[in-house]
Structure formats: structure tokens, C-alpha cells
Amino acid sequence: MPFKIGEIVNTHATRGEVKVYPTTDDPSRFKLLDKITLKNTLSEKEAGIEGVRFHKQMVILKLRGVDDRTAAEKLRNHSIYIPDELALPLGENEYYARDLYGMSVLTENGEVLGELFDILFTGANDVYVIKPLDPKYGKEILIPAIEKCILDVQIERKTMTVRLLEGLI
Image (cartoon, rainbow, N blue to C red; front, top):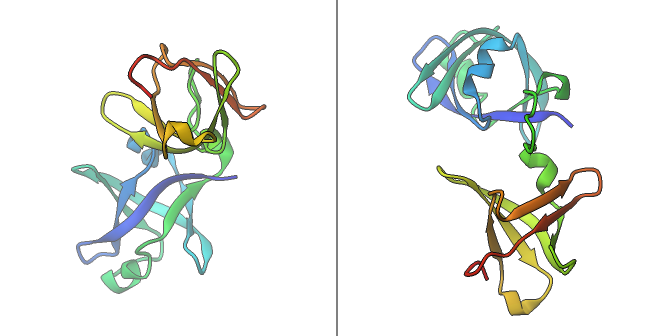
């Protein structure tokens, strides 16, 4: 499964550049790439990268063969993907967000809380959104992705063990 690293949100200027909202933790990774895969609901194609620069929180890409605003406009709303082998290496206790979705979430006592269905990316730390099995917990449980709360993550088994600190539920 390829990694999504950005979304083309608009054109930039008149020379065929596109403005990309990065969905990667390290937007500078765009400078290491020679080519990317562009996907939308209708198509998938490879594109070579001619240039990369940054403007505010956006990445400005110049793609081979996209030489004017009209051609760039056709790429709006395309997602940008790279193959797994180009993913940035993980450190200890780090995980790719895509591997966490759908995980079964258990308490340290072995109670199955529910399924991780969303991740909120905040400034301080991520927050995992759990869809609980038991209605007594409401519609969702928010668990901060901090060491005190996340005790164990087993990617292969698709399970996460958490400690529910006072006030979380």
C-alpha cells in the first residue's frame, strides 16, 4: 500500500506549478523524490518532479510536462503517493498513522474498548479517536497518544493496549 504524502489543492502562478498540502510529518522529504504517483477517483499516473520549494505551510511542486496553469489546474484534488520503500524510517515507539486505523483497542485489564477510527493531529500530541463497543462510553473516546496512556501497540496483531487516565471517560 503506497503512502499518501500530500494533496494538490491549487495551482501556483502561471508556469504550471501546483500547491500541495503536505500530509507527511516532514515536508522536506519532497526534495528527496524524483517521481510521485498522482491519484484521484478517476485516474492514477506517475509524474516526474522538476522542482520543489516551500511557501508558508505549503509545498510548491513543478512537475515534468505540466508547463502552464491550465495543465496544473487539471491536477487539483489529486493525492500524492510514494511507494513503501521510500517511506521515512520509524524510530522506537513510532508508527505510521495508516497502520493504526481499524486497530482493536483494549484496556490494560483486557477489556475491549472498541476500534481506533480516527486520529486528531494536534500541536502537542496526537489524539486517538476510539469508537466504543459499549454505549456506556458514548459515541467516542479520545485518548492522547502519550506514554502514560498508550502502553502497547502490536501492528501485526492490530491491537493497542491503553491506560485510561482519570477524566478520559
